[in-house]
Structure formats: structure tokens, C-alpha cells
Length: 250
Length: 57
Image 1 (tube, each protein chain N blue to C red):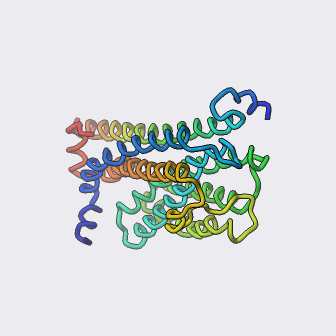
Image 2: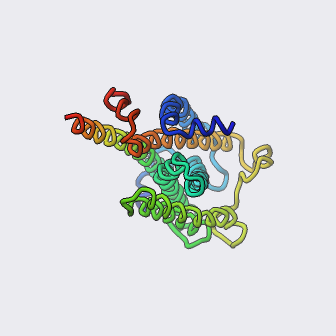
Image 3: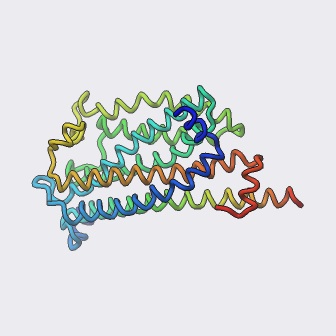
């Protein structure tokens, strides 16, 4: 297993294998997002309390989950890159940041839009919303720090430390609705038990889960493609990159 | 509230403005992430191709 990981972690092998993997994530993403949207917007029943406004859940909740999951992946990869000097780990951390920032932005903006008809306000400085906003700032700070140095090694080191420190924000986001009195509702699906006996209708739960899987596939496809390009750039003085570019392969 | 009422002819009635604007922002963000990925790919390929051509000449 370790040998396989080491072989996959070599930039050249990663480039080759990831090129094969991308369509396996991309096409199922398109398929699942289509099914999820159809189910969520057309099949799912109207909520007895929130009416049709709850349909924002199918993008809001999966985006919020992704924002935290990607940050965790980014911080762990950054840590591995920092401690064991594995180049691929630093690449994964770097390319994950803008994707994570995109999902965090989506979670915040859709939450704000949903908040207006339900809470009567676009924004409140509630613990959940504020900690999620801090997550967006952490992503932006990580990206800025990564671009602030001419030396890529220094950039990776400084930004990795920031990513690792920022990990403290993840349990704060997750438990904010329990630790503080917030306007934001508690989790409807917080464990496998709740998936087995959920508090929401199956026709609302399934599209939510389908969209959550679709978003993960999208992240995988994007991180692999961006990772491949980052590797090409970092390894530009290597023979295999030169042969590849001159061969016109994409 | 005025804008929300203006869009109430769309599916989801009085919530149409909120639901559809969320989904539009979702599509724009997803499109942007894929578009940026494609642009980065093209930029790096072109940058390296020019570099190698210069080195060879």
C-alpha cells in the first residue's frame, strides 16, 4: 500500500493516472447533479413550514459540507507537505484552496438568500454564520500567502502553517449551533443514525445526498485537473514535461 | 420585498426570487470554477510551449 502511495505521489505518475481518472469523476458529477436538481426542484414536496424556500437546501448544505471537507483536506495535505516534504501534498493543498473558497462563498451567499424570507434578514452575526465567514477569510488568506512569495518553498511553508492553525475553526463551525444560541438551525443529518431515520422526508433527503456526492465528484475532478497543471508548472525543467508539451499532448 | 413579489410569476411563487437567485449563483460559481481551471490549463501549456521553443532556437 505504502509503495503504491509512493508511486502515485511521484509527479509523473500522478499526472498520468489523474488524467485517466478525471472523466470518471466529471461525467458522474454531471449525471448526479442533473438527477439531484430534477429531484430537488421538481419531485421533492413543499415544506409544511418553509414552503418552497427550503429548496435552497440542495445547494446550501452540500456547499457548506464541502467548504469544511475541502479545508480539512487542504490543511492535512499542507501538513504532510510541510512535515514530510511530499511535493504532491503541497500541490493538493494549493489547488484545493480556490475550490474550497468557491464552495464557502456559495454556502454563505445561498444561506444569506435563504435567511431573508425565513429570518427577515440577509445577515446576522450569529456563531454559525460568523465562523463560516472566517473560513472564507482563511481560504483567501491562504491563497494570498501562497502568492506572496517568489520562492515556492517559502510560500508553501508559510501558507501551510496558516492552514494548520486555521483547522481550529472547523469544530467551531460544526458545534456552533450546539455551543451557542444561534438563529441558524441545528443539523438535520449529523450522523449515520440520522440518515437511517432522518428528520426530513426521503424525497428531500435523497436529492440532498445526491447533490452532496455530486459536489464531491466535482471537487475531485477539479483538484486533479488543477493539480496536473500545477505539477507541469513546478516540474517544467524535467525531461518528461518537455517531451509532453512538445508532443502536443493535453 | 418588492423585488421578490415581482418574480412571483415563476415556479415557487413568493419564494421564486430567493430560490432562483440561489440557483443562478450556484451555476455561475460552478461555471467559474471550471472556466478558471480550463484557463489555467491553457495558460500553463502555452507558457511552457513558448519557453521550450525559445530554448530550442
